[in-house]
Amino acid sequence: MARLNLLAPEVQANPYPFLAELQRSSPVCQVDPNGAWLVTRYEDMVAALKDPHRFSSEGLALLAEPPWLGSNPSARSLVTAEPVRHGKLRTLVNRAFGVTGMARLEALVRQLAEELATEAVLRREVDFVEEFAFALPRAVIGHMLGLDRSVFPKLKRWGTAMAVVSAATTPEMQAEVRDAIAEMGHYLDEIIESRRREPHEDLVSDLLRAEVDGQQLSREDLVRFLFLLLPAGLETTTNLLGNMAMYLARHPEHVEKARTDKAHAVNFIEEVLRFECPIQALFRLTSTDVLVGGTTIPQGSMVILSSAAANRDERQFSEPERFLPGREKQTQHLAFGHGIHFCLGTQLARMEARLGLEALLSRIQGVVMKRGEVQWIPSLAVRGPAVLPVELLPLAHASRTSPGGTQNRTTR
Image (cartoon, rainbow, N blue to C red; front, side, top):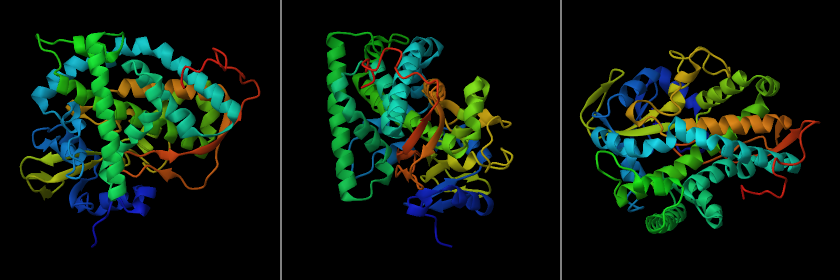
């Protein structure tokens, strides 16, 4: 039987039927590109993520730094660090993403979401990705890092380049990724040196001051963390918000429910995370021969842990192919990973999704997609629309000005 190619156009368009068939017949098997081992069952993925010694994050490092790319700081970042080093690094950066840090951000995120929603609804027909799904996390990350707004137009190029490393199969794509990563590295070096000379009230300055047991982040670790944070903070939330808009259009019966019931709105977000998770796969490298689901994966093998498949595993979720907000075990999905590398920005992503959804639903009666087929970002790792032309149908009573007036363009 021919191996499944995860980058084949038909798989990229809709991976779920292919993954479901493998989950039934060959839950641990080799796939293309490059003969990696694909793990599709929920319990097997959880077991692997709980075992960072045998399933090393070096797999992600190898994927993030292919031979054609050269140096990529994210390949040696927090997300690829082994347990002892990971614990120290995470303690240093965790304060920005804890309950206190999120509480400080909530008012800002709400204001930005309301301004963007007002502008998008006034325009009515928009590319939802560009005008809302990307614009919101871009403004939030820009604020957190104290970035000059002149660099905002470059953030999408940088984030996309980091997301498509695994799918950059042509010389043209590879050259674009190399250029974007080099440009991003140069800019982040300048930001770090600027904050070292003159600290601001932003995350970079906080990280330069942070200490644990008398140790500070090295310059290299700080660059690596920022390389991780910028695309992760952009791509995950952008894809989640874009996927949410699609499912509001596909399941209009949930629009009114989510508008009038905050609990249902939260349930809707969690079901989008399960059903169309923005992070489709995590990558590991086996440090020894390891038995998974009755199949031996050899030492030194690249392993793809498919959250896309695990989140639709009927052994874990009843009727997994149905979109059912409020289902049992709804928060047990693996959209944000599991174990020591559980996504650091989970609370931020959920907050942006919740406040973004609230801002939209207070202004619209529905979403209409303007294209039959969705153009997806080409990637092994992430899933979200590259563009999403929609019509936002306004509520009759929706405000026609933003809270700060339409001239208050803090998000641009």
